[in-house]
Length: 380
Image (cartoon, rainbow, N blue to C red):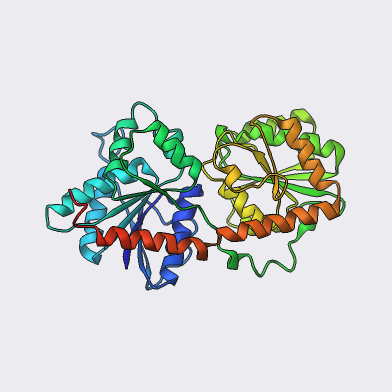
């Protein structure tokens, strides 16, 4: 099948999932076309089955904000025409579903009927999408999609509560590719980050307010008072500078390493003993899943879809949002005994295997097939 994937090309979860999905589809023989404003960060190599089409937005002084939606919808029309695209899959409702619908309507005028699947990822619904400025457009875009999927049961529930949704939302969870982690590193170079007697605690995110970065630092501060430890902070964002200042105020600056964005997440997780995710909300918790497939237990909030990934008392622990004292207590419970730590590591890995892409990919292929077969019936 010829599939066009529209996504954000950045380090965010939706872009990562869309890119990994496209790569896996190409390996199964599908022809995949990525359409976005720059090559996705995890799309290292193009091939006969993987193509990238850049959306260029001309810079006109007339516009205060350049019209990306118009450029994207026009690029979609050109790509569908030129390559005979059979299915359009847009990730993140804003602005991709809206632009996708406009492309559908333009193509329909030419007698070309292209079905559109919209995958909801989280903040496109729970944060940006429900803003009064965007809510009507998001509602319209969801309802005009041929098929709508969400990455967790929690996100499906939130979407139905926030929007007047006429479509049945199908849950297809986020995933990881176990074969990328199966070999592992023979030398994780752990000594570069910590001494032999120190545990390594890790946090990976976009350092936005919703991630509750101060809570990460506070939890670690309590951990290191009881157990020799280092904190590895991976990512960039508006909360990073404040976190650096917080570490200095708490006197733990020498125990915290800020690495910035990285394409070597698996190498970092290879030497990690514990992952912290105290977020205000998470539609799924992909960062936690990536930690778990690397045998890293998770201490997290119980927000959003995280409980669908992190099983309390098995792969780690869940606490109420902001309860940093309990999170620290649970973290110490995992880290203070090596036998206990190894058990949590093993359980985290075993639970993560159910989210392997080989289990999830057929669910998307079934959706594509259903959308393609119903393309004339659902055209408007």
